[in-house]
Length: 322
Ligand code: ACO
Image 1 (tube, rainbow, N blue to C red):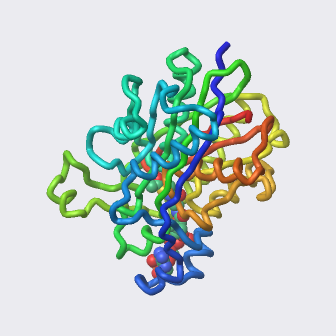
Image 2 (cartoon, rainbow, N blue to C red):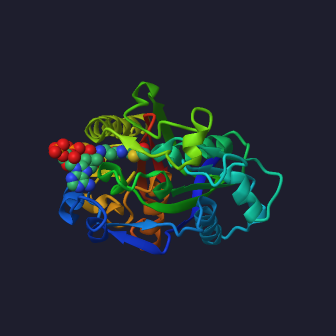
Image 3 (cartoon, protein in one colour):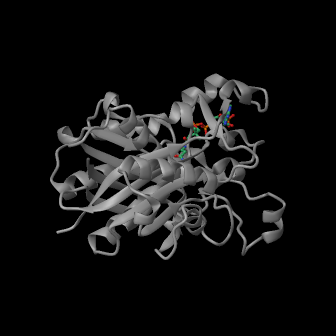
């Protein structure tokens, strides 16, 4: 039986940091409101001439180095992003070209904040069925580009960044299971309501901004993610006490705390980056994973749950053995 294992991770955050204090000067908001409601103190913002593929490339090269692989060994490139550089080619094709490789499949996955879980699920299934031996999977966003910087209810919550993993075929697990969900009937609660096909004039005028009914999204995220983490435990016959780490999507510290409670997990066993990263959408799970691998919290032989929730709604959970 072929398993899929994460053999390396990498991440990248743009240099510029935007603090809550700085936002106080730009909007009718306070450091205290943002921190107490969301857990965010600061976020990284891409430079004007820095695009999603730039962030993705830096994270990808770091993951390759960590896995001890060269770009030439990669046989599948999947990028999760809501903020591609171009309508087409996909950011995955742009990234493949930057890495100097040709021929292998390369495509984007769009599931907003659940995008990385979706992309990793695709890679997991490719490897399990023999379609790939060494895959590069990236979550990369310049979410700051689809925020209305005059809307205090959304713009304070997000940031830019990228995280990447190399996933390889192996004789030992690996990714133990993956559980994805979506419900498009909630399309209006969290969205950028226009796109190329519906309103290209507004798009060109830069009016494609994120809209969110925060309270409803919060309630749904807590319920759906709580059920998703129980689903992944039950599917694997694993007890709550066996989980070493929760690596959650970083949308709101109160959502993260609620999911930790569903798992009876101390917050000491939860990787939290939201205070410094904000919500980086598809980049948030691989960014958090990479941070905890690099600082030595995540070690070989541990059981880890990934979970994420995003616009669509889309959500999912995975159980990983490191
Ligand atoms: N500063 C000060 N006041 C603010 C701000 C701000 N930045 N933003 C909103 N307010 C005000 C509101 O106007 C409201 O005022 P009112 O009561 O006079 O109308 C008040 O603060 C309370 O707002 P609420 O919406 O009730 O605040 P809540 O406690 O729900 O927190 C938040 C808001 C942080 C957005 C929360 O609802 C949340 O995190 N929601 C879920 C986000 C999420 O999980 N998204 C999914 C992933 S994202 C993706 O897929 C793209």
